Length: 107
Image (cartoon, rainbow, N blue to C red; front, side, top):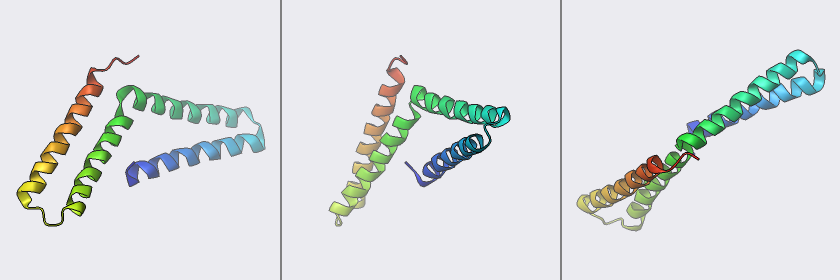
């Protein structure tokens, strides 16, 4: 998960917690409606990410970048051509993983 995604997730959790705390302290219908709406948005976002495969695409992207970084770290004397070949191989793997997601059934 990238830093911006992590911050976004943390913000969403914080909003949900604030809505829950307000409702717990007031027990009002208005705060219950806000809590219900915030929870509904959160659930819808989670479902959309799962159905669209965005969580998995992000995970594959992170794996790709980390694999290239690991190659460079383990091969400090690698030539630019060797690094380019490793990047190309990892990007091809990433692309194949994303294509496989696109071909999978939704349910």
